[in-house]
Amino acid sequence: MNVAVLISGGVDSAVVVHRLKEAGHDLHLFYIRIGMEGTDIHGGDCAAEEDIEMCTYIARKYGVPFDVVSLHNEYWDHVMEYALQTIRKGLTPNPDMMCNKMIKFGFFEERWGHEFDRTATGHYATTDTIGDTVYLATAADAVKDQTDFLAQITYSQLRHLMFPIGEMPKALVRETAVKVKMPNASRKDSQGICFLGKINYNDFIKRHLGTRKGPIIELETGRKIGEHNGFWFHTIGQRKGLGLSGGPWYVVKKNVHDNVVYVSQGYGTEQQYGRTLHLGEMHFISGDPWPGECVSKRITFKNRHMPEFIPAVITRLDTPGEYLVESASPIQGIAPGQFGVIYDENSHLCYGSGVITGQNVIL
Image (cartoon, one colour):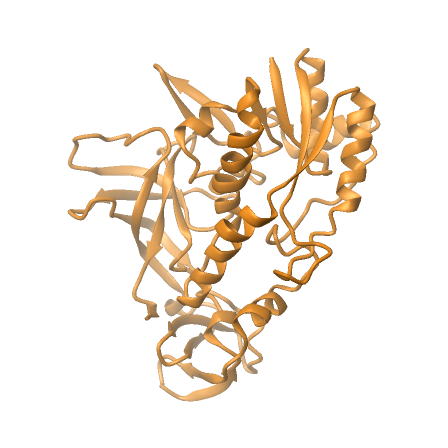
């Protein structure tokens, strides 16, 4: 097959190249520039040159073509603006999920990827075919599983994708890279939000949204115990960066209209936990798994990136696209704006995701 490979300069996508080349596929490597390095227009700094140098080396090692393609403006318009607009509303965005849907498997596919039989990435995920339907499925390595970052992609995008390392534990990926003498075999995995690069998150938010002093209030007593620089710097469930003594303190509620951040104290405070997620704008990748049924089904889910799959029951509500997820155990830091990602009861098939709504953010 003719395969477009999205390569980042990291060890995962490098091993993807090795495995596909060994399997006899014809490869064309692509690096997507999405940061705003070298300019102050949008304030990003992805420091891509080292990544591109590494990708160039790997392309030469395997004798395959390599191109750098730019999606700067598209990333700003469809991911960075989404993130900023979500933060302005007091909600918690997931820019990595939007990047996969809109950029890597959206604009890239429309302009370059569609010319190839498949597009391959270094995501830790797999696919499974049941009958004639392809499903997104979880990776062999539960700790590295990245299906929660892919749970907004479309069915047509999924059908065109390959995840060549999804069946491999991370340790084996590293071992393979060492064995075949990859120059990035010991390179650290990237961390944080992809568009920020080396820029501090709070510095990025300050540049675009500014600052505005407001009170930090203890929820139980109504007592002012500190000040913040703007509700947009804080997210539900946050513990670090509050500047409060006598902790731990957790952000448990925000009043966007009055610029108030509410906190609760203690490791076991009930205010930081909940059992119910209201999901809106539900997106099922491969179609509704329970069409026409009065849904009350056992599932597992994630409400943030983590290795655990939490058992729950999902119920379809009367309003189209809205569901109620009732967890079997208390969940820490349910952050409106984030996505609740829905899996089957065995945590194998990833059905899709919906946006978390809630009463702990007052608009």
